Image (cartoon, rainbow, N blue to C red):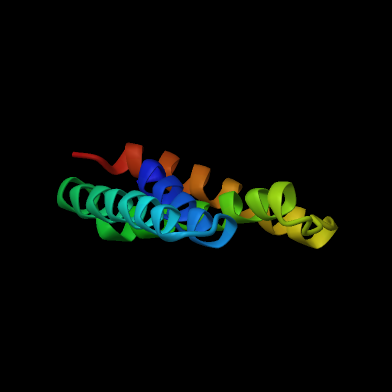
Length: 100
């Protein structure tokens, strides 16, 4: 699911950052790979665990925005990123204990 989040975020980034039909096609292809990875993930994992992991895309989007679009990562955004990461760690760690 992490690879899915990265691919979805990168696909959208390519659409926004680059111009032209070629970049649109590449962005669409990367986005489609992410969507396919999501479908595969849902087949082998529990939706209640996997879907919240998809929120990692917000972290990637914030980092890409800061690096390429000069968006600021103020304290509140960094706190939000930290909460997302801690929540995912707790969710995944708790899931490993409940696997039968």
